[in-house]
Length: 219
Image (cartoon, rainbow, N blue to C red; front, side, top):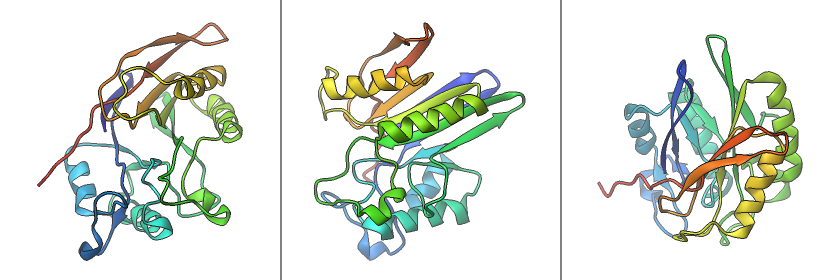
């Protein structure tokens, strides 16, 4: 999924949703149903100019903990300046990051409302993927509000190829509004959908992108 987000004229970041985990060994690369993507794709994303990579997705755990570890290590070792969201190598890592530019601060976070039915995440490894949790989201946005001027939530959810917004996704978006999110950018439906503004309970507006286009290559 390709999305460019601009929170202010002085803070411009390019964000991409990397839906599948990276794998080091080329002979283990695979497509549906259990995806594994060569790390060269990560190199290409950086060369294309992306600054933020979200990886909490339906397929994040397709290669289980090995896929998470390979993905996290790739970004940390190869591109430490990239803002990598949604997956973690350590249990004590924060679920959000704050991007600072001049005197402006933007908190960014990424959650997936689903995990592939072929895999379940063991409790002891639940920290590896930021799945949708009202408890965690409430906690994260409350902290982010104290640290940043704007909070952006990248939410992986919704029904594939459905033009209308399903009730469950709307409920999650409404909850994010209640917690004070400023921008919500959704992925997963595989099609371009509407965007608009919702009025939060505090009277302020929240910008919502309900789904973005896919950014793929057959090369």
